[in-house]
Image 1: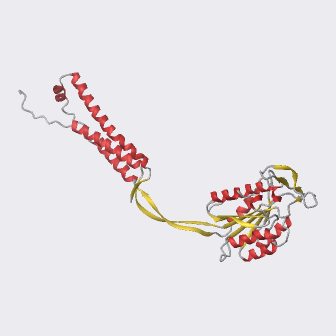
Image 2: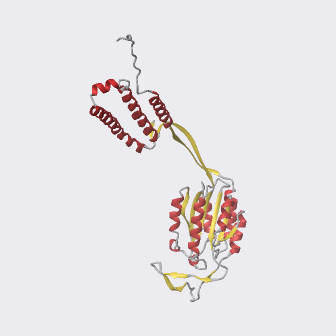
Image 3: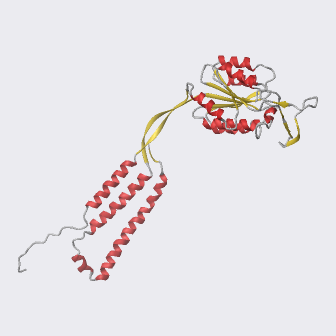
Length: 344
């Protein structure tokens, strides 16, 4: 199959007729100038050594070479070559806590926005890894299945808000189980779960679920977000505007939320992962990504595609030969004079 990769240059070929007209105009102007100088027939006889056909031929060669160069710039391609493209990486799921406690502002602007920024930074670092997103609070569900489309994953990330799940609470165990169900069950490796939460689990089942995940070959990295000191949880109205009040329990007392590192450390330890605390400089992301990149990778995508071969070299080479030929062809012709004697 034949095609031009940069066919915009083909439009420049339309200028070649103008190039030809330019030469025609030039030759006519030269002839008129000679006629003004004197008797045209006499001048042509005096300039008999100049070959007009050679001049016209040399001009034609220049026009032809210019056309070949323009064709070369359009990158003619013909002939294809089959190439195999492989993509290797890990299957990575990030579970984000979207419970009300993640609205606490002990980390600016709040815990949830900080966590979403870290997730976005993780996605930006990925090279060939599949990424999936799970949102959880009192329930857990898959926000984005495993995909290589990082732009789509970041789009789904933007919609992960507390009102996404109406059930209150922090069911870390359900988030882990949902991740277990989302991975390919037959594989015993290449599976990473990054759990980002303040760690305030209320039923104590997370460690048990983490053990089951470890048996499936899942490595869990936990990222704790928040402070050790208890802070109140702001309340927002239906329009998303913050009210003057804070979250209170049934007795009217202010609900305080703080980071539970112990639970998160135990979850990571059960699966051979590691616990990190979120920092302003996000140094924990470098450490997590380095750990994941050192793990054995699997082939996530393999496909064959036909790649067209550039053939512009032939056009450039032919144009070069023509230009050399144009230089080598003389404009003057040899005139043989026959000697008829000294008295003629």
